[in-house]
Length: 604
Image 1: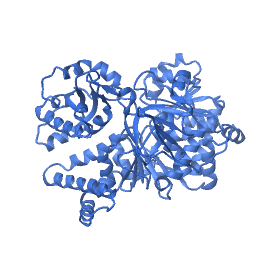
Image 2: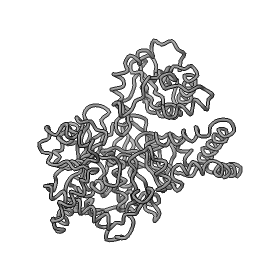
Image 3: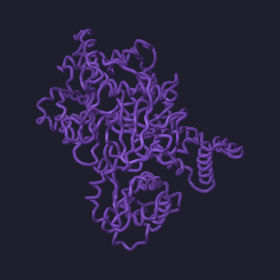
Image 4: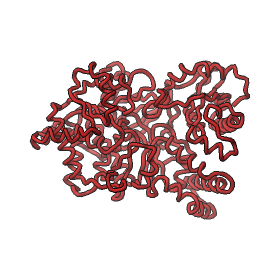
């Protein structure tokens, strides 16, 4: 058993709540910029002051009160990532209510379960299509009194309805909740079974965001700090950053459509971004693909190698040599600058979470001048529970305990977490709560190691451990993450439970495939055809060999099978936070898994 904790200087009284963070920011800096919106001519980003945002929040909160929302009532919010989400989120809290985020891709059954389990009184949705989804299950939700549609002028109607509500009533409600009162119920994405409602209090957010401002001040609390949110705000990671920006003073932007992400990054120019590793993989792979072939591709690969080598050298006692420093300076002028431009040109920091990033990409981004702070956390820990920080970074780890938290790894490798950021329980599920919360510690279900300096490395999830027929325990995450780094690989599911060796199901990235084929002198073909092409399979086999370098022979992938369809959120194989629903894949593709163990094609 190993245990490390990180001290905190943050103290909050029992009356602390999220509306109080906004009130303090308003008193301190009413004319400062809180957010920017792409509402100007030609999509220019227009600033919103703290005072203007607070006034909008108050007006929408009055509308909720006018519609019958009482303190403690639950209000569901179903929308893409946009300014109105943050506005409504804070209005719900200011009205004394509890926000319940719903992924905008949720099915009617998921909406029914979340709204029924929380007893939602009002649902605020983005579009008429979302309203139709709610409408399909409305008869099963007798407590749902109102559905407000943002794109149909619903917020304007709320504001009009609330015009007569006195300011004193909003002041009273905003101060009602204390540190231990419920702030939100966030439903886990649910890779298996029905999503569980994670109950987070006002205190989890207030203490944790103030610790974030203290521990990540260089990232989020500089005068020029600004971030563009594009992850779903129904996910705890983005929601934490939304709240963090209030006390930190960072300017907040939103973009709902990742198809326009590069354009929006270039226009907004964030100084820090947060994303899952897949985004960082895509930026790298897209840049390599755009290099084409010949001299340009060799130049890109040389510059990437220099970036990685330079970053690794930073961790040695002697540091980079003079020759390496000169190469790094040249690579910066020729290649690295353009890569930084893809993130908007001003990005100094990137916060990665949700899955392991891998040392190669971590060193690559640091080498081009964007320091990736990889972290680890769950919905139950209000997002970050360990994170690399400026001056406290080990590339390849997920960092030491976040300020104010403690981390323990038991003798079986199980990760436990303690601190004021840990949830209070699962809604209406005492059995699951009792299993997860033991003597003040949260059993995460993840596996990892703690080094002598207290830095955590994630090795897998307890429920995903594969035991081969030979009795070898294999954590699939390491292999999956490494193989997914290949430009044309979209998803990887490592298999082999009670089988003679480890295999993998692989899907191809249809977006990256055409450019990759062209760069390799191959004719255009669709993903299904490519999945059976000997040249493509040979390239994938080489990628498997590289992935296997991270594990022992007994743990290595021997064979792969390319599936004819990708695993996506749309077809139900990914959660909204882009995690593979492993149990469903194993069930639906059982025949493909069986074929791995009778197929006579050469070992992968």
